[in-house]
Each structure stands twice: as C-alpha cells, then as structure tokens.
Image 1: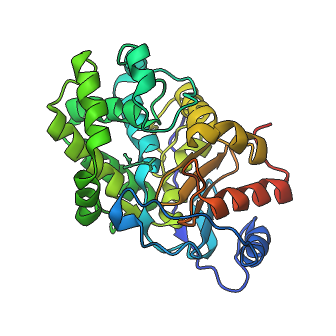
Image 2: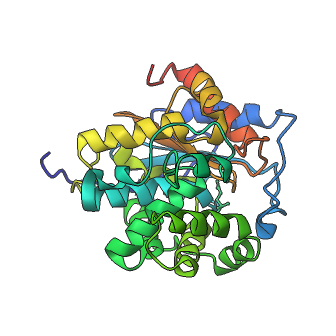
Length: 321
Ligand code: GLU
C-alpha cells in the first residue's frame, strides 16, 4: 500500500461534536445521562475500585485522524485488557503467524482468568485476549523486543500523537499485590514450555502494559490502523490487510470476555474491552470508537460502554454485518 500523508487532528468537542458522527455522539451523550443501572467498577485491582460509574466518555476517530467526542472523552483511564490488541498487533507485525502456534483463536466461553481450560488444552490458551493468551503474547513480545510494555506504550503514543500516554506504576503495583491468578496461569503455561521468559519478569511486563492510562481520544486514534487495513498514522504499514482482518476477527469473537456473542448481537463490531471500563471498537474503513465508563457488568464489560456502542450502530446503521 503506498505511503499516504496522515494528519492527526484533535478537534475539541463543544456543545455539538464536529465531524461525520458528531450529532450521533451528542445524542448518545444526552441519552446516557438517563441510563439507570451502570454496573460496578472492578474491585480485584484495588486502585480501580474507587472509580465513579457515572463517568462516561466516547470518542470517534475517522481514518484521516480527525477525532472528537462527548463527555469525558479526553480523560485518561486504565486501559487494562485493551492493550492486548496492541501487543498482538506488534507480535504479528514482528513475526507474522508464528504466534498462532502458541495461542488459539477460538472464544473460550470461560471467564478471562480461568485456569480450568488451560489444563485440558495442554497449556495452549484459547485466544490472545483471555489473560493466559495475553501472557503468551506479551512473553513473545518481550523476547522479540526486550521491552514488551514499552513497545505497547510507544505504539499508543505514536498512533495517538500523545506523548503523555504512560504507565501508572501504582496501578501495576496494585495489580501485582493481587496477581496470584495471573502468576498461576503464567507458571502453569511455563510448565508446558509455552512461556519462555522468567515468570516474574513476564508478570512485571504484563502488569505494566495493563497499567497504561490513555483517554478515549487516544485509544480511538491508536486503533486507527484497524480501520485503515493496517496502515499507521504516519502512512507506514503495521499489519497486512490479512493480518488486520485477523485481529478484527479475533476482537469480534473473543474481545469482550465470555459475552462476545452478546456484544456481536448488540453492537455488531469488532471490540475489545478492559476492566478499567474502556471498550475500543472498529468500523473497518469508516472509523474507530472508544467508550469509557467504569461500571462493569458481570462479565467485565462496561455497562454504559456497551449501551453506547449499541446506540451508535443502531443510530448509524453501521456494523460489519
Ligand atoms: N490486568 C488485568 C488482569 O490481568 C486485565 C484484565 C482485563 O482488563 O480484562 O486481570
């Protein structure tokens, strides 16, 4: 694909958000205020537990880098599992299909931190977006680059144009103090030879990666390559068309914990959620979206976030189906 100059414009939303979907965003921003049940913030990472479920932000980034939003769309939040998309993209960019020898691409039907399935399947996780699979991807990125978390942060910075995107060491530490289950997953896979870095180093990289704080605007921009068939903000190629399709497909089938079927049914877009309350979604060729609201449903997806994406695709008629 030829290089194409690309500009990242940060357009501030006022009463009426600008851009192709500005009116839709404004309507969703107004409607969400009336939403009753908002779920509860994740409490297994103590530093996330105090987040206010009434917070809500939503941003749209168009393929040329125009970005706008409503509500708290410029407020940094804890990206958590959303970073798994970027880690996977980096590994695919660096070594192509190799990673699929070590991790599958089927929905798991189990909670994101489940150990049970791993034993049945000999230490090969079902997909790269459950924790076990993400640990394998980060392990591989660590081996390939020597600084997995740093590479994920740098990709987010470069694609969003925001050098303030960074780790939050307190969040990483908070997760580490309650990280026994992730440690168990990593040790278990190491026993099958599917983790090659020392487990403590891997966990430190993984917790740092998950601790990155970024806003809806940052993440909608950073995921732009998924709507541009793999082309980065500077016009260079990160992923091939085929790899981009693969990442979007795994997001659609596995990106929202064991509620991916319900998400596809309601929203109809590839999406990846995190327990910080963010969700990134892709309308290939059209735009990328990011919503944030910290109250989660029982699967770990943002209640207001899924609701807002559902409204977006209903009001615009856009989906991959
Ligand atoms: N750092 C979190 C964990 O490993 C990420 C969970 C998530 O957002 O799904 O438990």
